[in-house]
Image 1 (cartoon, rainbow, N blue to C red):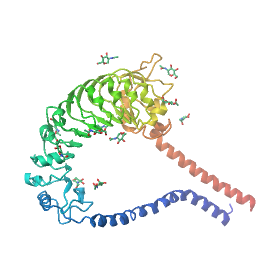
Image 2: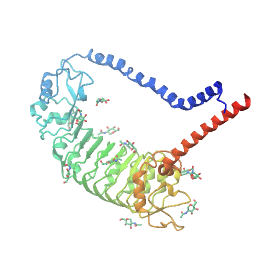
Image 3: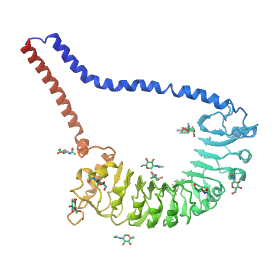
Image 4: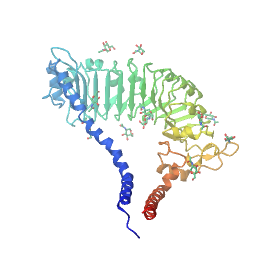
Length: 438
Ligand SMILES: *[C@@H]1O[C@H](CO)[C@@H](O)[C@H](O)[C@H]1NC(C)=O
Ligand SMILES: *[C@@H]1O[C@H](CO)[C@@H](O)[C@H](O)[C@H]1NC(C)=O
Ligand SMILES: *[C@@H]1O[C@H](CO)[C@@H](O)[C@H](O)[C@H]1NC(C)=O
Ligand SMILES: *[C@@H]1O[C@H](CO)[C@@H](O)[C@H](O)[C@H]1NC(C)=O
Ligand SMILES: *[C@@H]1O[C@H](CO)[C@@H](O)[C@H](O)[C@H]1NC(C)=O
Ligand SMILES: *[C@@H]1O[C@H](CO)[C@@H](O)[C@H](O)[C@H]1NC(C)=O
Ligand SMILES: *[C@@H]1O[C@H](CO)[C@@H](O)[C@H](O)[C@H]1NC(C)=O
Ligand SMILES: *[C@@H]1O[C@H](CO)[C@@H](O)[C@H](O)[C@H]1NC(C)=O
Ligand SMILES: *[C@@H]1O[C@H](CO)[C@@H](O)[C@H](O)[C@H]1NC(C)=O
Ligand SMILES: *[C@@H]1O[C@H](CO)[C@@H](O)[C@H](O)[C@H]1NC(C)=O
Ligand SMILES: *[C@@H]1O[C@H](CO)[C@@H](O)[C@H](O)[C@H]1NC(C)=O
C-alpha cells in the first residue's frame, strides 16, 4: 500500500479538527461573558455607595445605636450605610438623627436578650424580622407593635401566642414559619389586622378553624402544614385579589366550595393533603391565570374536568391519590406542556389509549370501550418507574424519551460506532482517491 500523499493527510487532519473544534467554538463565546459580568457591577456599585452616603450624612439616633449594640449588632461602621451587613438595618433620612425603619435579626446567639427598653427606642421600625433567633419570648412596647407594617418570624422566638400577634394591627405582611403558634383559631390573630395583604403562618401547629371572613385585600395566604380543621368557608372566595392560596397539610374536610371560581386572581393553589371530598368544581374554569394546582392526597371524587386543559398558563397539575374516576380528558401535547402532571393513585381513573401512549407512564390503567379501567393500575411497576423518571414531563422531549432513559447507554454506543465507521470510510475513500488520481 502506498503511503498517503501529504495534501490528503492535511485534508484528513482538517476533517478531524472540524469535528473536535465544535465544542471549543461553543465555549469561546461564553468565556468573554464571564469576565465581563464581574467588572460591570463593581463600577456601578462602588460609586453608588459613596453617593448614598454623601447627601444624608446625619448619624443614627444614639439610643438606637445603643439598642443595636445590646442585640450584638456591630455599630463601628455606620449601620445606615447601604447595603448593611446581612441586610440587617435600613434607616430613614430624618434629621438631625436618622432612625431605623427595618431591622433583621438572624442567627442570634442563645444568650441574646431583647430588653424592653431597647425595643422601646425602636418604635420607628416599620419592618422587623427574625430568622433563627431562638430568644425568649419578649414583651413588645405598644408603640413598636403599632408602628410595624411587616413582621416575620422564622424558627425564632421559641413560641408565639395568637393574642401577642394580634397586637400588630397595622401589618400589611405577616410571616410566621416553623415557630409554634398557640391560638384558638386564625381569627384571634387576624381580627384587628385590617391592612393585611400577605399572610403566612405555616409549619406552626396552629389549631382551630379558618376564619369566617378574611380581609378583602389579601393577595397571599399560606396556612400550610398546621392543624386547622373544618370546612373551607365560602367567604374565602370573596378575596378577589388573592393570587396565592396554600392550605395544604391540614385537617380540612367537606367540599371545595362551588364559588371557588370567584377567586379570579388565583395563580397558585394547593389544597393538598387534607380530607376534602366531593368533586373539583367546574366554576374553576373561570380562573384564567391558574399556574399551579395541587389537589393531591384528598378524597375528591367525580371526573377530571376538561376545562383544566384549556388553562393556557398551567404548569403544575397534581391530582394524585384521590377517588377520581372516568377517562382522562387530556391529550399528549397538553401533558407534555406541563412541568408536573400527576394523576396516579386514582383507582377508577383511566386513559384513552388511542389518544395517550402508555409510554407517558401516568400510573393509571388504559380504558376499555366503556371508559372503565381495563386492568387494575400497575401500581408496583409505575411507582418504581416514577421514582427513576420523576422528571418525565419537565422537558419537551418526544414520545421516545422514556426509551431514551432506559436504553440511553446503547444509543451512546451506537452513536460512537457510527462516528468511528464514518471516519474509517473517509480514510478508505481518501486512500482510493489517492490511488486513482495520483
Ligand atoms: C438586601 O436587600 C435588597 C433589597 O431588599 C435585596 O435586593 C438584596 O438581595 C438583599 N441582600 C441580601 C444579602 O440579602
Ligand atoms: C445563618 O446561618 C446559616 C447556617 O448556619 C447560614 O446558611 C446563613 O447564611 C446565616 N444567615 C446569615 C444572615 O448570616
Ligand atoms: C396604627 O394603627 C393605629 C390604630 O389602629 C393608629 O392609631 C396608628 O396611627 C397606626 N400607626 C401607624 C404608624 O400607622
Ligand atoms: C408540632 O407538633 C409536633 C408534634 O406534636 C412536633 O413534633 C413539632 O415539632 C411541632 N412543630 C412546631 C413548629 O413546633
Ligand atoms: C384595599 O385595596 C383597595 C384597592 O387597592 C384600596 O382602595 C383600599 O384602600 C384597600 N383597603 C385597605 C383597608 O387597605
Ligand atoms: C404549600 O405548602 C407546602 C408545605 O408548606 C409546600 O410544600 C408546597 O410547595 C406549597 N405549595 C405551593 C403551591 O406553594
Ligand atoms: C362524592 O363524594 C360526595 C361527598 O362525599 C358524595 O356525596 C357523593 O355521592 C360522591 N359521588 C360519587 C360519584 O362517588
Ligand atoms: C407558583 O407556581 C409556579 C409553578 O409551580 C412557581 O414557579 C412559582 O414560584 C409559584 N409562586 C409562588 C409565589 O410560590
Ligand atoms: C390537545 O388539547 C388541547 C386542549 O384541549 C387542544 O387545544 C389541542 O388542539 C389538542 N392537541 C391535539 C394535538 O389534539
Ligand atoms: C378514545 O378516543 C377515540 C378517538 O378520539 C374515540 O373514538 C373513543 O370513543 C375514545 N374511547 C373512550 C373509551 O373514550
Ligand atoms: C418512537 O420510536 C418508534 C420506533 O421505535 C418510531 O416508530 C416512532 O415514530 C417514534 N416516535 C416519535 C414521536 O419519535
